[in-house]
Length: 296
Image (cartoon, rainbow, N blue to C red; front, side):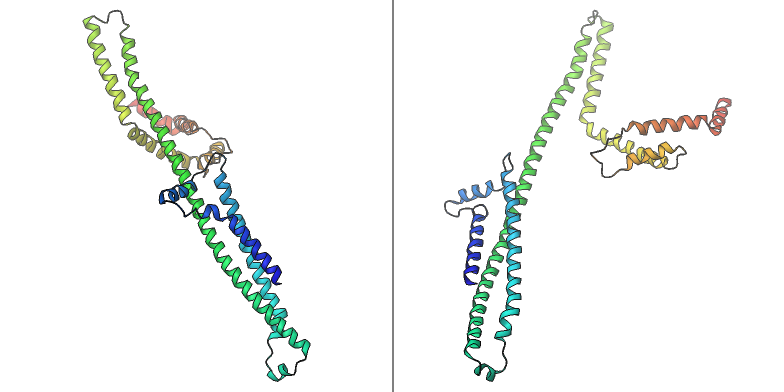
């Protein structure tokens, strides 16, 4: 048992050593080198080598912990079944009267108990180190994911700013292009043409740049108005006498959106609004109201 336990301890120690290089950066050297070593642990390459390494290490450590726990349980069962019946002898007189074989068994049980408890304590220490390693690797994995998310967020922000800049440049040249087109008018130097041209150019530029500079506020206001009205129309589809609209209502109530399915067009909401107007005009009450309006 001692040889088997020593072999298992040596084997686990070897596996433990294989997980040490990236979880314990070299403490030798300057602080700047250590900082660079830790920084490299949260950066990944295009092949996701670091992410795969962390996942592999976590899986191995969990398997090691489960194996060591099972080994300790097996030792406890072995001790209760084989050693305790021989070791726990209450009568001292019976102990003195034992023959040589019984004393040899008792001595062997004592040695096994000491060796087993020593190995069990060693496994406890290794288990504690493995659990600490799991925490370290999980921290590195979370740091890797957070760093990747931050890098992607910065890239997306930079790309969005570039697109926004190009959009503003395009919108800036839009009224200039309109003005340049108007300069092609043959009688642009005429007094009757020049004054309306200047007024039109000024109004187009002012309106265009006002819309651009308040684009977010305008989009939010229009979106809020539209979605409030959209929600009311979706609720009205539930009580609509036409069963087709009741089924279409379910299209716009799916949450979360399913990327595998086809996204239904929002024009169905507009179509439903127009269909309500037409049905209201064709209804007897609608014709009566229209007739009263004509008489008045």
